[in-house]
Amino acid sequence: MIPKQQFGRTGHASSRVIFGAYALSEATQPEADQVLDMLLTYGINHIDTAPMYGNAEKRIGPWMDGHRDNFFLATKTRSRTYNGAWKNIQRSLNDLRVNTIDLWQMHGLTNPVGWEKAMGPGGALEAFIEARDNGLVRSLGVTGHGSKVPGVHIRSLERFGFDSVLLPYSYWQMGNPRYAADFHALVELCSERSVAVQTIKSVARRPWEERPKTYNTFFYEPLGAQGAIDKAVHWALGFTEGFLITAGDMQLLPKMLDAADRFEERPPDAEMRALVDEFEIQPIFSY
Image (cartoon, rainbow, N blue to C red):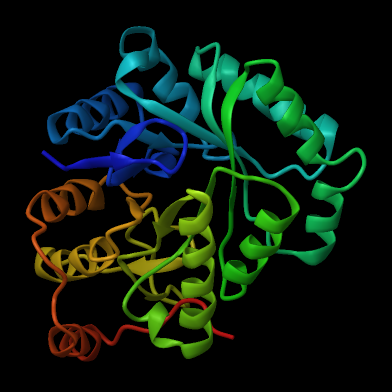
């Protein structure tokens, strides 16, 4: 069973591995049922989804009828306006078949213009606060992709008391000194304020570029061999304060869960450097 720890100041003890529900974006209901059953086997009690994840929320919904108490349920909005965000939360509540969302997140909040719009008058933040005050959501967070997201998250936390952040984290991404410095500054702030830190892209190998896409991981090619996934997942879990979100692919999910279930310690740098060389790993985000 994958261990649990406190998810920031939310009061919930979440599994250190969170299910990334993009994996269900193209799933049938029987496939989704099998995946969600697997989560229970490994003790996963936290799901991260979004209305823009294809079929994911509609596939999770039937499970919530009988398993709502088993899962901390997080969703997102990409809208930067009050009205757009409000429509998204109503859709998510309907598709997920629940009355309350545990964590609602502003998705991909990295663009300066979008940030100002979301945080300003008539912006998404107003909908977030209203939804929380009315009991539709319990906690609020921000997510982001790209090299500059740690700095943007710091700015977001200075603007409002969000309960969680989400951003890329891997051995190769942290090899960029600027990203690493920004990441550590964000983690220090989150630690001071009891803000949960969620990490993504742990098994990203390189951009797809012109190669055929054999996994449902959108814009990056993932590691596929179990041994390589073991090292990548174990390294990411070596950030003991954080949570790791699984990649958005049903083929990769059992491999990542198996790796996490066997985690004991972070692999040494020599092993990680050898992994980078063997699989020609490249950071998918750079300054």
